[in-house]
Image (cartoon, rainbow, N blue to C red; front, top):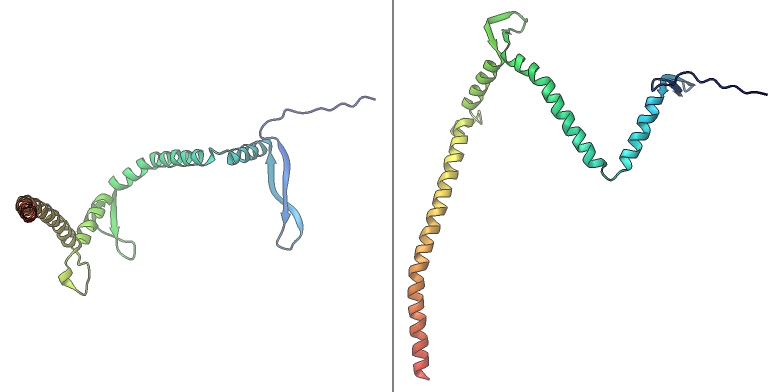
Length: 179
């Protein structure tokens, strides 16, 4: 009795299993998902990697590389979108005015934002630009004042230190003389 087993070419694309599950009626049926040798190999690789202590650093590195690759791939599209002429439209989608670029629209919007009041109901607060400038000027003045006070304190300490030393010396000398 001879048993002959013939195995065709096996590749990573060879289907070795099918997915099953329940449909909306609760009946057991095929999901149409096919498992290949590549799926099984990938599953085993992932299971081993996840158990490894170095998994977190590897995952972070892969995520970083993926992010860099995505940025590199979309950068030309972003540059083109910013430089390509576009037309402003009204609410009906009809062109209004001359062609412009996205960069010009962004710059115009930034200028508007800088000039708009921070609080529409209290104009004394000023615009975003005014508040930013005020905060920076205040920070610079505060820093200068702190440095000036430190210098003045150091000078006073030096002058007072000499006077205090003389007074302590006189008091000690007087105390020793009374003994």
